[in-house]
Length: 172
Image (cartoon, rainbow, N blue to C red; front, side, top):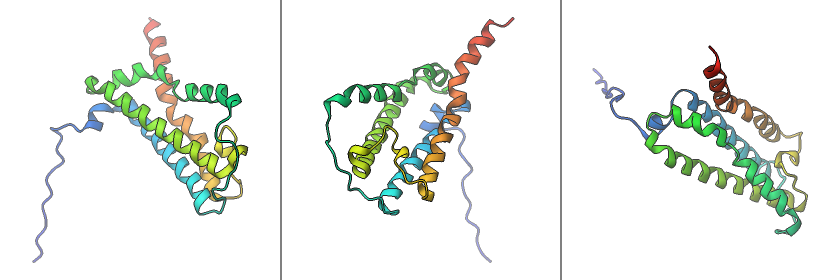
């Protein structure tokens, strides 16, 4: 007679950090996070496995490119319109600063990683979107490119919610 192991029931009394931070609409942002991981992984795969390699050459720093870099960097962190939506949908609003710090930190790390990958793979010829340099015949490239297209769809609800709330508040 085999003895069944009894698993404790799911504890709903305690609240994990993620559960206290994200509910409802914020869980949609998980799709955005997943898409970032897929894109970085696919581009790394193109460089390591699919033979593109990391032999790009060029100047590491070019003063004339600073305005473009600053513009791209500012654009990447231009998500401030969703802050009220994120804050209002959090279960534990006291963790908002911690969530922002972690989010901006991880975003910065992913941007730095993409910049390094793009430069090492394509050197001076890297375009503003590394996916534009990828060989379109490779499956891993297609995954990265299509995932880039899906990313904004996962963020649509977060961006549209403040607009919808403002419209609804003005309706009779």
